Length: 90
Image (tube, rainbow, N blue to C red; front, top):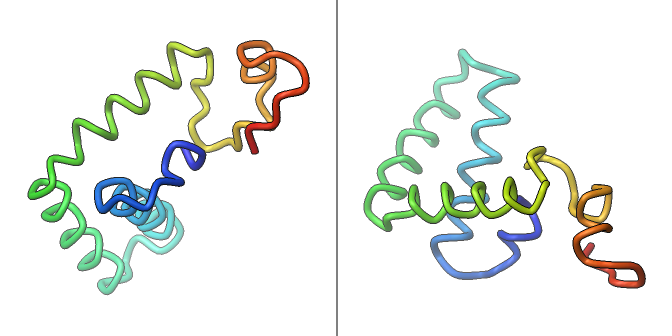
């Protein structure tokens, strides 16, 4: 997913931050500051309509044979097969 979120648009920046916050919350689920940040980001996702963008990005990656969205694109065998040899997508 990281490759798709390299864009500096507000929607992609928000999705990237939201994903990071989810990981932080998994590590420390009782942290109220992280919980509050996640709630604010969820509200922002609603406001910007970012849920559809995130779902579409996941669908595209899955259709490309990249179901593990947490891995870097350059580390995926499917990415190398899809994009061909000699193309650096990192």
